[in-house]
Image (cartoon, rainbow, N blue to C red; front, side, top):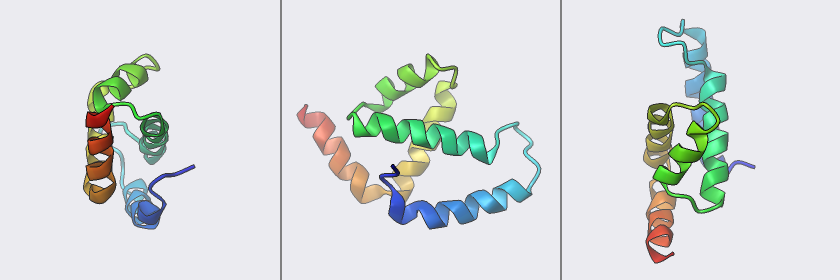
Length: 91
């Protein structure tokens, strides 16, 4: 389940455009989508970015990649993350 459904069509258009270009860094659209899905799962469990990085690193995902995807989600979903960060501070 995607918690960022409103942004999905825009993101898919960008991913489709990126998929048409050769990947110089070895990261595929599928890699980004997989990490986004894993991050969304962590967000549903109200994990911090640091906790999410730690968990995904245990699955072999580089923390720098997690941070990049997380930051992109924050940029595209500013209102959600404002509320989310407030909930994190309250826990």
